[in-house]
Image 1 (tube, one colour):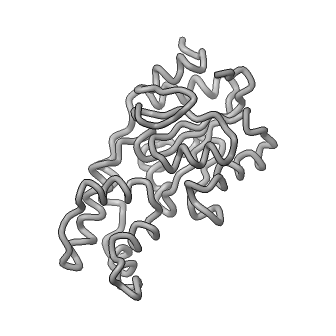
Image 2 (cartoon, rainbow, N blue to C red; image 1 turned 180 degrees about the vertical axis):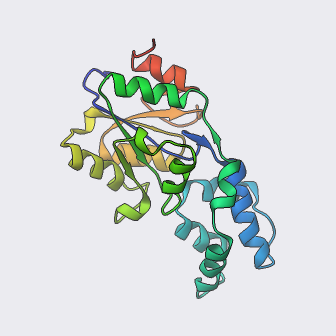
Amino acid sequence: MELSKVKAVVFDCDGVMFDTALSNRKFYDEILDAFGKPELTEEQFINVHMMTVTAAIEYLFPEFGDHLPVYDKIRSIGYAKFIPYMQREKGLITLLGRLKEEGFIRGVATNRTNTMESVLEDNQMTAMFETVVTAADVKNPKPAPDQLQKIMDKFDLLPEEILFIGDSEYDRKAALAAGTWFVAFKNMGLEAHAHVTSMGELAGLLNINE
């Protein structure tokens, strides 16, 4: 893998920047419980972990002709109380600092929508990225390439100038469609240009270890 041309390093949020398994599970379990449905199965959890909230609700409530009551419940529950259950990936802040020192554009491409801003604010990370693109910012969320293409357009970048780090099949497909480099994070089963299991390994891959 030739990374000498890379100018931007773009992160998925859930499963890469943060371990959000517990927070997302609690969030969806509370919604399901409100409508008398059982907690997430493992298969459901894997799927909703990649999806936008809209796609997840359609997936979890296929019998509902109108999902408005579910969205009303989501608004009443909110997401703020689940943010403390998110665990920031060890070494992330150090890596982001090194990326800035080395002149890389730092970005986020996530299928989160209106919760991403709060996640960054609560973790004092808002100023650590030059661009944040959520599912709400594009026509088509991942696995479509729209988020990565939006970043390319904003900074006038070629596909080979972006390194995207993700942990799901949606991430892989988005990178493939956009033509960018793709690094799989803590998921050896994903086809990728490289695999890493820590932020330190990612720094080593980019040759920016101190």
